Length: 471
Ligand SMILES: Cc1cc2nc3c(=O)[nH]c(=O)nc-3n(C[C@H](O)[C@H](O)[C@H](O)COP(=O)(O)OP(=O)(O)OC[C@H]3O[C@@H](n4cnc5c(N)ncnc54)[C@H](O)[C@@H]3O)c2cc1C
Image 1 (cartoon, rainbow, N blue to C red):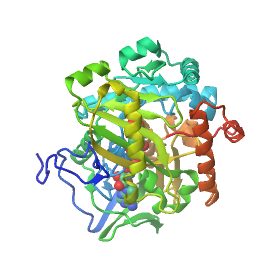
Image 2: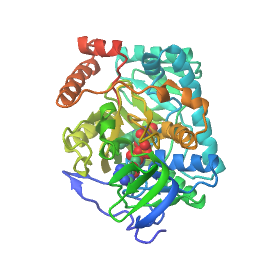
Image 3: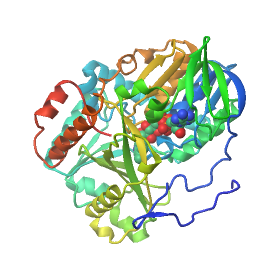
Image 4: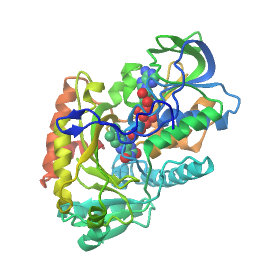
């Protein structure tokens, strides 16, 4: 056990909710040194989340002799990679329907194939490199809470078939409640192309692997400037810098701080999750949940949830919040209104459980694009490449992005670069204050749809433009 891990200790509360991240409340590998002094490398990667670490590892395969340095402002997994729900998607978009709406049928088919190949490759990588992160291909249970959502599930299965994805299993109310017992479920769709991980074990596993493969990693070293000068890239921190031929900007939602113009293409939003105490055997039995799938419902502002290895329920909401002005800040890591809402929705779904305590609550920022999928690019004379904007679904996609970024850096063309998602950027968001007004207007409109009303003119217009909303 690493020195300094205090074990599970009482944590501060927000109202009566104990704060703290369940995944991080466990032994972790020792931190790497801070960046001090002058360093040189072939490639500097800024950001030690999934995107940065996958990029470094893929680059090592393509370019074995490269000097690779990763610089992380906190400890690896400080961003979304250490705060997420661990649902690993076999698709690149949030759904096949959305992929068709945003990219057209032919491209959605190609994305579906690439998504499945990507998941299989991700799985093989974990096995080949003995990365123990509690991965299991349990599938995803998509549940309908209204009859309109039942129609949505039928459409989703049809869209999956259009995209060449088979094996999705429609479940009526009895069958879905036999999977997971909530009186709120009217039906469901079991999608076998999804898995679950412990995200912090994954990010720590990638870190350890990168170190054993000769990647130099610096933690607790915020990069304050990333610029191209005299044909090189310089990444500077308060105490040192790295001068490299090329750079990967792998800072997802934080990217605007180093490259402000990227903010045109995404909005930072905060998602919140809570984790219960371990369920007692009788509570576990009252739920069923034998296949231990990840679960989401079909609302725009959906709940997503899963079991942890020790039989707690992780309960999250895509009711993501935009904080104009401050955007990404530690002051948004907790939100009492969200915690209250999460607790209420949990009890509404599972009244048979009686009193269940929540023992962890935390939030994290995501980068949302107008098409729900990430975008790629190269800046600074083509020396700084980036991929960001996973819109709350980045575990599997960042594996793909790492591979694409590595090929971009090594200048080795790959068929993945032909994906529309890579070639084309999402439509931009308007500047402030229009941005916050439009987010508020769209949020209000989507709430009406979740309440069972038809899409209004604004949503129909955005739909026609291929602009989507979710997280
Ligand atoms: C609550 C929540 C639930 C989610 N659930 C899921 C889910 O179930 N499934 C799923 O697929 N996705 C989920 N996501 C999204 C997923 O976590 C992200 O898409 C993914 O982790 C993005 O990885 P990344 O490496 O690109 O970004 P990050 O993990 O944010 O990594 C970027 C890193 O860059 C570092 N950094 C930033 N600026 C600097 C700087 N100036 N200098 C040095 N370092 C810097 C940050 O500290 C951070 O570690 C969720 C996200 C949240 C917040």
